[in-house]
Image (cartoon, rainbow, N blue to C red):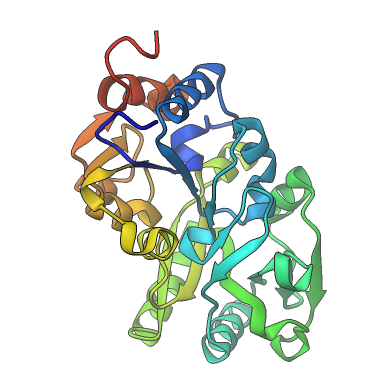
Length: 291
């Protein structure tokens, strides 16, 4: 039975619940268990696809829903698709051709639950070392095709993007942002986890359907029962901004992007210092319950 002022906890993974090595500490797991014991619904909300966070969901002992791909898809804790928002084919084609023309692979994240393939990689350029590391470390299969016309799953694209050094990718992202205004949502940011692994400043370009974000997918999940004032959200990245703005309590990590920090009600400690656990103790759990 829920006897707290909160009904729902929306928790980001990378940079929030996870340390730089992509792991969940025992202290954070204990805090998570304490939250669930109070009857608060925990909703995972991550930029990763479900396949990319499946091992984390299992480590968490999570049995609720997952908002994945920055709000593009809602799945069960086993990865079964509930609802989704795909990228329009004309946008996918434009982004892919632009990225390919600049000498980079386009990475098309697919609805794995619908087509059985997590990624289609388009183009003939060498795959960036950060992408190679990501796919290999998480054992993510992908299909390689030379042209966008060869994509066998055009109706199942949740996100189209690219990975490259920041000096190369930022100008591409800025140009696409102007071209696709009103047609798609564009994010580009530094990939902290990849940078830790590869030792260089890696940048991500991500393009979604125009209305995609974690909050809009949370609204679809909760429906008419949604009470923003009884929702607490914790995160650190640009894809957390909408849910942080709408939640009754927004907790932002010490390590957050400067643009995200502007939307904080309170600040948690660094994600490498069990900031999630201390935040739950200070602002979510009744005094003494996490001891």
